[in-house]
Length: 337
Image (cartoon, rainbow, N blue to C red; front, side):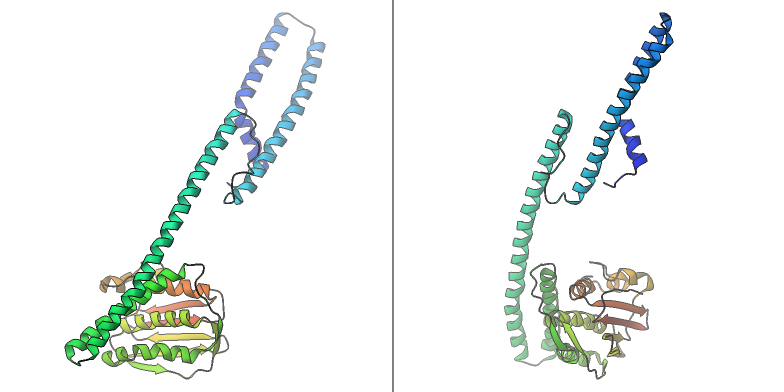
């Protein structure tokens, strides 16, 4: 409810009392007609009218002030409505009391519904978190079995197991990121060591796809959460590897003083019309539609995680030229070009 201007409040007040105004006008007309028919002296009639007008003005002014104050109280209450309805202004009549009872009933029902949904949501998150952790055991067992004998078929199966692991990690990240008690541990870390962790994980993908890695030396200490920043860099590097069939991927600092990390590839690129929406949940864009397995979750999670860490992300891209992702590890403003 937006607070109205004084003129708007006056118009609303008149609208709410139009029946009284019409009735009063009819009464005035009746009295005027009777006085005219009986040819009463004008002076006492005018004097009585003057006194009536003064009395009416006082009562209308008093009533309007109460009306104005009540409007202001309700505007203030609207901003605190999530606390409860116990501070509603006292009802002036039975109809207002009935409306307040209806509001209280609806509020109680919505509160109960929200409580049930929160419990259900918590139970669902707990279940899928447990499932995601439990599924890691058979995946690890599959990896050990496949590694016991080196064949082309097992090599291909290991690649599929690796992708399954990626999706499981994405599920865990999705489940945890909206949890207010997510385990954020902010410390100072060497950025190059964090990047090397990710590169070791994806080394076999670089080799299999024959993609050159251009990792430049950097001397940068960042205040961040190691686990979550690793997750973000993994998602960005995985996207770069997935959509780069040949060429190279470069990782370097664009501005060491401002702590801007750049991950640049020579892959398929992102269509210009898709760029403003790449951080939306479930948005896959042109590349995603070509890759039927795309989920549209990776960059959405990256954006949410970086927001929690007070880092920012910036993406520029050209189709068939490549994509450049910049992670600003010090600023608090997100830009998409």
